[in-house]
Length: 103
Image (cartoon, rainbow, N blue to C red):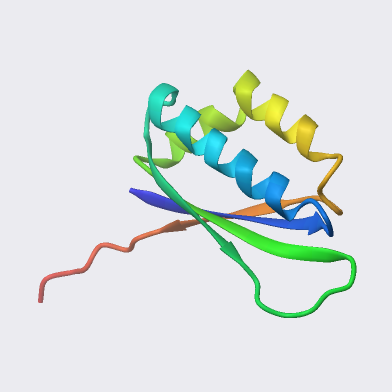
């Protein structure tokens, strides 16, 4: 299993739209994308006059499942839509769990 943190700066006034879209995307992923496990959305606490920072933390079966999703038409459609409400370029980080070694 891997975890992916997707980081976004959402333009002020578009927070609800971003959060609603997140819910729709998660529902789509649950029903249509192999390897998707779950996701949660986090909003940064603090003041920024122009953007609200978000992180979407998702769990995937493996790296290949996540990468396959990022090449899908549904992902491209969502990112194209997001260009109107996102400030700057979003980025992601992939986290993997290191196996513990028995001693």
